[in-house]
Each structure stands twice: as C-alpha cells, then as structure tokens.
Amino acid sequence: MAWDTYYRDSIAEVELTAIEYNIQQLKQRLEKETEICAVVKADAYGHGDVQVARAALKAGAKSLAVAILDEALKLRRAGIEAPILVMGWTRPQDAAVAAENDIALTVFQKDWLKDAVGFLGINALKLHLKMDTGMGRIGVRTVSELGEVLAVLAETPKFQLKALFTHFATADEGDSQYFNQQQERWDEMFSYFKRNWADDVEIHTSNSATSMRVPERMDHFVRFGISMYGLYPSPHVKRERPIDLKPAFSLSSRLIHVKKIKAGESISYGATYTTEKEEWIGTIPLGYADGWIRKLQGAEVLVDGKRQPIVGRICMDQFMIRLDQEYPIGTKVTLIGKQGDQEISADEIAEHLETINYEIPCMISQRVPRVFQEDGRTVEVRNSLL
Ligand SMILES: *Cc1c(COP(=O)(O)O)cnc(C)c1O
Image 1 (tube, rainbow, N blue to C red):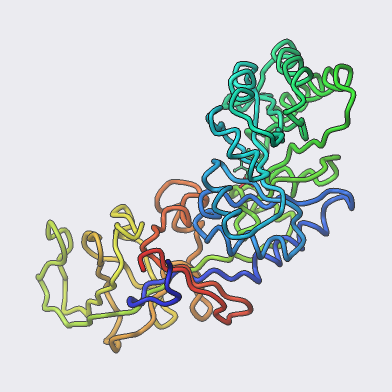
Image 2: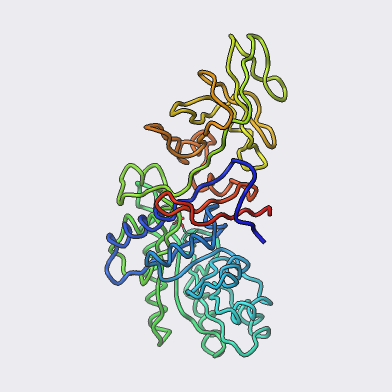
C-alpha cells in the first residue's frame, strides 16, 4: 500500500491541469469526430499511470493505450472502466485474462490467433489488427499476411475485430518522403481490408506528431502520448509548434548540506572536480538510483532562480553542486522545471544526454514520489516505497 506521504524532499510534481490543457489544445485542432486515446504506457511516461489516466479521461479522452497487459490490468484494478488497448505483443496464454478484464489486444500473427483461441473462456476477446507499413517492429507487412489473419478471425466468433492500426516512423521529421511511403502502404492494405471484411472497424494511425501535424486525417481516434505530457515529439515539431503545450512534469529537491571549501579540494568519487578558489558546495539528496544518472555531471540545476552546475560524480543517492553563495539548508533545488524566469526543460536534459525527451521522465525511478497537483495544489501523493 502506498502511503500518501514521503520523508525525503526529492519529488516529481505532476501538474494534472497541464495534461488536461494539452488534451484540450489537441481537441481543438482535430476534426470534430476524431477522439483521443491517452497513451499511458510505462507508468504514463514516468508521470503516474492511474492518476494521469483519470485526468485524461476527465479532460475528454475516450480510451487508454498501454504497452503490456500488466499495465492494462493495473488500470482495471484501480477501477478505470474506459476502453484499454495493449499496443504490444501479449502471450497467447494470457488472452483469457485480457478478455475477462475487457482489455483489447493487438494482433498480427495468424498462429497467435490459433493458439490464443484455445485459452479463451466464455468472454470474447477484442482485437486491434496492426499493420507494419514501415516501422519494421510488429504488424502484418503484406496483403497476403493480412488475408491469412482475416481468414482466421472470420471463422472464430470469440474474436471481435475492433480496429485496424499502424504507426509512423518519421512523423516528427521535416522530410515527409518516408511518411508518404508508409501512407501508400497503409492505403493499399486498407483498401484490401475493405474489400475482404464486411463489418466496419475503427482506424487509428496517429501518434502525437501525426495528430498535431496532420490533424485532418480521418482517424476515429489518435494515440496521444508525449505531447499529452506537454513535450514536443522532436526539436523539429517544437519549432513548428502546431499547438501550444504545457509540460506537466517537474523534479525538485532541497539542499541538505552547504559548506565552504578551500581552493584545491576535491568533490565526490574519483576526485574528478577540484575547486579553483574558495567555493560554496551544496549537497542534494538524489542520485543515479533515482534516475539522475552519472552522465548528468556537468549539467545544471536551479537554486534561487539561478543556474548552478553539478560538480563531481553523481553518487547513487546524492550529488553536489557549486553554489554562487551560501544558502540555508532546505533551499529548494529545481532539476527539471521553472524557478523565476529560468527553466530547465526535459528537452535540455535530453540534449545534455544526447537522447530524446521521452526518456527523461521515464528514467526518474520509482524511488521518487509522484506528487499530483491541480492548479498548483497537491491532490494526491504516490510513494512506491511505503
Ligand atoms: C508509444 C506509442 C504511441 C505514442 O507515441 P507518442 O509519440 O508518444 O505520441 C502511439 N502508438 C504506438 C504504437 C506507440 O507505441
């Protein structure tokens, strides 16, 4: 059981009002009929699965998507009744668990269907059929494979085909050549499908980048992930700014020790940093076990509205910064977020780490409590340790 408190001032604040704002911004851009499916896989990109799912549904999202069955089951256990899609591969022997909990699974292998049917009980299983139009990850790649899967589906009433979908590999880039190629493959497979399947099914082809940049697509719903959290899918889309977004995630701690150090003294493991003059050094109780990885040595944090550098190696549970002056114990330190007119964004951290912003909230570990807010007011705390 997670107690709704914590005993260390290193927390991730998740502004649920921002999530709602981002959903509303996208809604205004989409065609009226197009619904939003909130992608809450990977603990809602590290933000907090159940709380984000509830906020997204409240803001008008009609369904939820996750990567694996366990994530879907967690949402059901929390009492969430909205439609849920598992977008990854599920073991055929787990089809019954999905069906019992009214969770839709992704299918693309005919042998999977033949295996899974043997495990099903009385409940029918909802399925979304995945086309691989160029992502090269999962999905049927040809019309003949598609035909084989449809043939098995047609003879098995326990399977309910609900939707057809695909995923674009380059929707966040300026060059649209590969995107158009995927679109052509999709058109070809979809027209084959329409000729060979009598019932109407839903289609969904858009992630954040596609839904914001090509909002006029006739998707029944879009799979809204990264931008629901207030981050643009790439620097290119950030420059385009198709809609306004507010980041929901911030990370902060407090100074727990401040000391003046003489010139020529060293800091942390390996003594990789040596003071050049007399310096104020602050200690922050957060480290690589919290996801604040060692590669962040040399990055900056905000104290008193000013940027202050991380010095010396980051330890498992603590790291040090060079301060521009003395500060009292308990002074707030912002690692991701705003202080005054300064901001350290997930994009900036991603750039320092030579990765994408998606990775940043995902890498902040479960040891860091998630503090959920609405309009800056704390409404819930999730501490996975207690
Ligand atoms: C993660 C994922 C999404 C969401 O992508 P974003 O770029 O975060 O919007 C959509 N579809 C699939 C299949 C995914 O795996």
